[in-house]
Figure 1 (cartoon, rainbow, N blue to C red):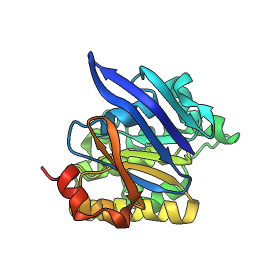
Figure 2: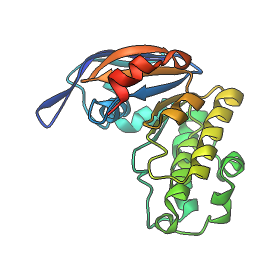
Figure 3: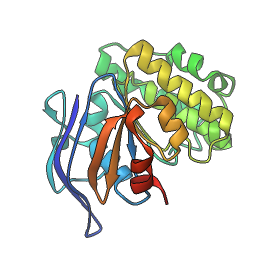
Figure 4: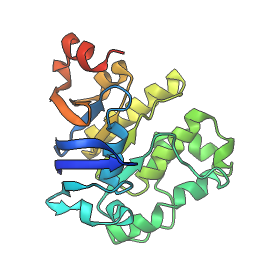
Length: 235
């Protein structure tokens, strides 16, 4: 589905990704893991077109994403939830969610006037707070809003960058439940950067370990053993 081939990326004159190769299979939940500063967020931003790559290729269904603008990549069916959420704090919950409707219209060839009811089924609190400003929500509620906003697009791929950072445990569980539900029922492909090992083991089907801008190990999540954790994840 998504193929990353020999990607090099520089940021501020420093090379972050070094000939990185990565394959994401349709219907998978792939956890991108590694210590801080190894290039995980840079990789996600490169996929989304938020950072340019120096060389290599990023493709989705055989089409070169790296030749498209960041805006057009959303039309390819990728929903993105960045680290730190990046909701619009002065807009209401409803206004934040409606931002994705024009993109969805171009993707699905319909013109929905309303936010999909499924968003409120997954995150009921958003319906209760439709008219509150995003900046007035708690951190966990803002994360639910950020994920809901990405899902408005009806993506085929959902990319999440540390969605549980600074979130209370009950919301962490809910986010995990939502990921598993969407994957099982809708076949949604999920790419997840996650530092919490317990959460990664719970939701992930595959893992990719990154060290110094390269994928150094990849396998089924059930095969992430203590030796790999000690070598690439332990501080």
